Amino acid sequence: MQRVSDILKSRAKQIWSIRPETSVFDALKLMAEKEIGALMVIDKNDKVVGIISERDYARKIILKGRTSVKTPVKDIMTPVTKMFRVKPETLVDDCMVLMTGKHVRHLPVFDKSKIVGIISIGDVVKATISEKDSLINHLSDYIGGKY
Image 1 (cartoon, helix red, strand yellow):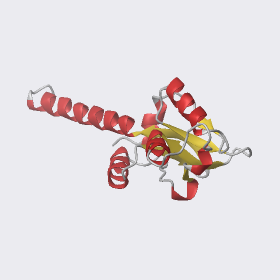
Image 2: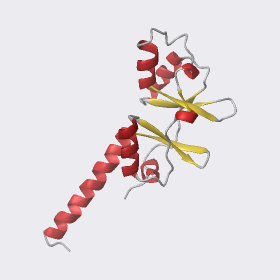
Image 3: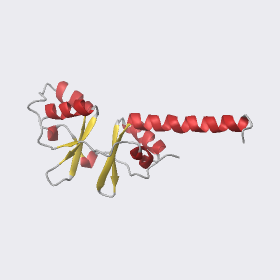
Image 4: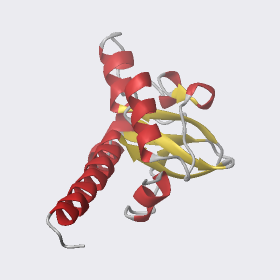
């Protein structure tokens, strides 16, 4: 069974983040530039205080008639106290259950109190498909007499 740590090994080590007082517009520009769907929100003391995603923008700016230029990230982010998170040893299947059940697309990965990465639903689906493909190949080889 694959674990979150397996996903993190195959990804860039960079964790993109933004400050809580930064405008949502600047957060969106960074997400577009880096081709990512979420940013960790980290305060001046390097403490994680939340997460902001494209979904937050769609639901809390556009639909509420706010402007992204004038609204700070802290006003629409999901605060750390309400943020779903996983550990490096968490099974990928458990992440799929959590993401599906809670309707989230990104999961920050914490090792104790330290952020070590962030995974997306795309990462989880890719890892799940890869694991299933490997199992199918092994079973096909077994049935075909290669063992």
